[in-house]
Image 1 (tube, rainbow, N blue to C red):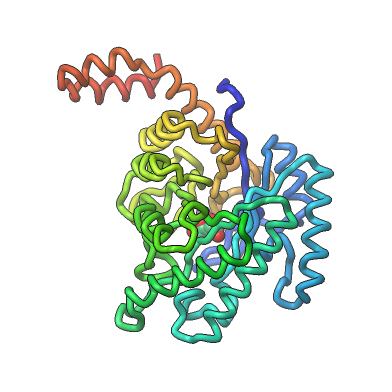
Image 2 (spheres, rainbow, N blue to C red):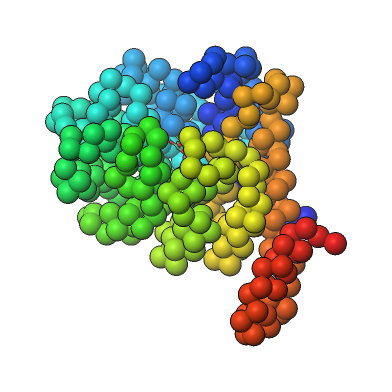
Length: 345
Ligand code: XUL
Ligand code: MN
């Protein structure tokens, strides 16, 4: 098995119950305590949170109450020997975010998004993490003429600046996704995220989170996205999963659809030393709708299994042979070398 360079993380939403737009849940909901225990049993190291995963019904609670509950959660995590990897503001559920969070056409609603993000930063501080993840879910349009792309870019920078000013230590990871729920999102790729970072008041504290499925939905190779972000020293978190082409966001187990694409992601992580600065490998995966309750944790365990097997494959890759084929421009046999290495003896 691979050397323990990697530490693993999942979120409470990854124990999902099977609801889709066409049918209800197929598994009973489990409590937060059950999920925490399951995560521990599986030997994962961290949990990632939306603000309202950390403090349920957050909107009905006073700021003081929210922080009190965050402190209680921190105690629970400490007691279990787990850490909080990040906190993300859920800016896609409330009525104020129907037209977007930071890019809403309504000024009051934009303020709601910024205030809620500031509160997320306060929660993260209490939970002992400096990492805030921004999945810019509704920062886009259904009708392109309804917003200006240029104005939206300015509004995103203004929002990031307000967050950067709120806490001088917090770091912000933009998680790009090209579509769903929107027709077109304003920050569809890592290149967009890093370009946006450079317009902010403190570019050093704005980085990225790559999700495999999101990169595939953008028609990109997630391994290239990883290499690109890591060349800038900007990959601070990661959501590994899989996606079978241009469909709805599938969040399949890592390697489920395309083992070779998964292998190349692992190679990119290894090549760039992901995890060496304490970054976590998170699996943003969901059980298939058909999954029985008795198999509730398989997608998590299997994703990690596949990941660790691919780490072995990356570490035993026949580099010399591959280099000789590259020098000879024999990409035909290089292709076969990779296939046979993945198939094993
Ligand atoms: C949505 C998605 C989110 C983020 C966290 O596609 O991936 O779960 O990872 O807000
Ligand atoms: Mn994700």
